[in-house]
Length: 239
Ligand code: SF4
Ligand code: SF4
Image 1 (cartoon, rainbow, N blue to C red):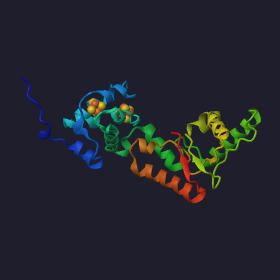
Image 2: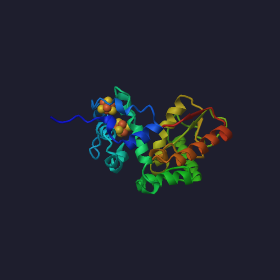
Image 3: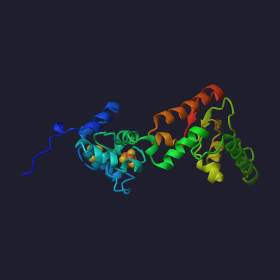
Image 4: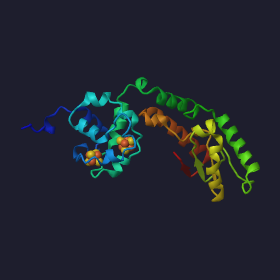
């Protein structure tokens, strides 16, 4: 008869590291029910399996976990935590797995997007002047081409607007007309809003790749601009 594995006798270092940073992650409470895996949108990538990841963590398979590519296919959507009957925080594990990889060894695409954001204010590397030009140009086209939107009001850095809206930088760079539908909705409901010019992009690849310093820098620059320059009480991030 197979012998039971006693979890309390295993040498489990990585789990302790993660629990130091996320003490309420509840890894020991996993029922292996598989609900997390059933709803995981990444589960078809590299056979991603959050249930198995938790089992590996609890069994001290630290080397295998650290080497696994699963940490890079998770979208950090949080669906697993919402569905989990024990509220086990899989994204906290994923985040700390990413953070355990030396920065220069994290995936090039994500790393490059994070660096661009820190340098220019957007992951696509668009400068704020180009962003403002594109936004105002597309707004002018809409005013000219779409009846009912002749007085569409789109601004960048308008002080005192009630709401500051972030914008995924992919749209102004590759599909500018895709910004229009949201503007029309805001116009129709009479929203008082503006784009910011500082850290205007809504995406945050530094957060995604677990670069705490980069993520913090982006948010602090953005918050400082909103609070001190624009003096707007509300921020909406569509990402
Ligand atoms: S849903 Fe929660 S309890 Fe069920 S296998 Fe996943 S982590 Fe474990
Ligand atoms: S947070 Fe990651 S592991 Fe959890 S459901 Fe989303 S993609 Fe899957």
